[in-house]
Image (cartoon, rainbow, N blue to C red; front, side, top):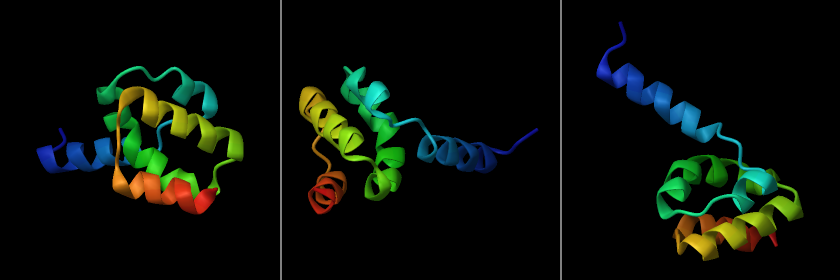
Length: 78
């Protein structure tokens, strides 16, 4: 049985490895879903294709999820 700390660490790594492709991001409709995808998005943005980065911008705008670290990373990507 895992301790609470181990579960949190496992959950954190799952969040960072979530799919943040254009198809996934175009399907995001809620602020809460962006909260779940934010760690993976922040991790993967520097290596994303332009199409995926554009989908990230659309998802951020649609959900009104304005995270400074993510926006800075998008700005450096473009």
